[in-house]
Amino acid sequence: MRSISDIDPNMAIKDPDVEGITWYSPLNKNMFKAYGSEHFYEGDYARLSRLQREEVIKVSKDVEHLSKWCAGLQLKFKTNSTRIMLDVELRAPHDMNNMTTIAQCGFDIYVYDEEVKDYIFHNAGAYPRHLDKYRVELSVFNYFDKTKKEREYIINFPLYQGVKDVKIGLDSDSVTSPVEYKNDGKIVIYGTSIAEGGCVSRPGLAYTNILSRWLDMEVYNQGYSGSALLEPIMGDYVGQVGNQKLLVIDAEANAGWTYKMKDNLENFIIEYKKHHPYVPILLVSRCLFAADMFDNEHIELRKFYKGFVHNLIEKYKNLGYEMYFLDGDHFFDGFKFHYTEFTVDGVHPTDFGSYLMAEHHLKSIKDILKIE
Image (cartoon, rainbow, N blue to C red; front, top):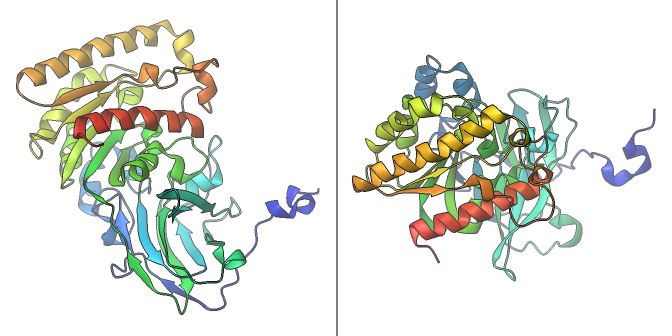
């Protein structure tokens, strides 16, 4: 049977030419700056530490497993290399039916454009989906620009799979150094599969990664697919992240599908505030699902939680804390098409759906943090 790559060579996957390439570890702090996890330098590229994983598995085996996935992990650096390659070993190969290989298990790269003064998508590493080891070339500047101009890059890690090992390949005669975000502090987003990035087409389009670029600020992705149940231990772990400016809680699509959110949310907040009593918290209601057209039980449950969250916010405001609300009902407003057009499967946003969510989050975050 003929494949599309037989017909259109642009669809073919090619092995990169590694002649003149030297391979480096992303753990090299003199070359790369890692973001998205305080435990990156433990070497297993996880969002929770090994000790935290040993503890949380007693509460949720799913969270322990998902915490080894790399959603939100990033590298920032500048280099004059005309080629940027990756040598990757995954924890497992691609196995999702509603998410692309690149989004689940691949990397993408953004380059800073001096004319537009922003990071622009540059390339994504496509590879055969059955593999758990692969090499890809991310930078294509060697094809049309051999001036060895120094450029700034962001590499986004896979969203729905863990990485056992990764090496970065650069021209052997190139110079590389780490790059910091301009705005100090961290925004931590705790949430569901939607926060984790399901089901966008590549890592840079998860709304948490979009926000980090737009804000020029570190954003921690603490999204746990199907498992954001607001256990108090997770409030503790989220609170252990240092130098926080804002916590975003977007867990209703998991914990609010039953009454777990009613039982757990306040205890989650109490554990978090032991670490950051005065950091503002933004509570986000879930975006609309296709089921909201016909599932009366969950329509009523969504209405219940809107009132429940508003009452909780008022309680904490009266105690002198900063608490805010973002209404997910309106993420996909303003278009003539039905809101389900902005999802892949009636739940998880498309790339444009994720972009719209990022826009709404951005406005709230700028208002709360007083960012121009």
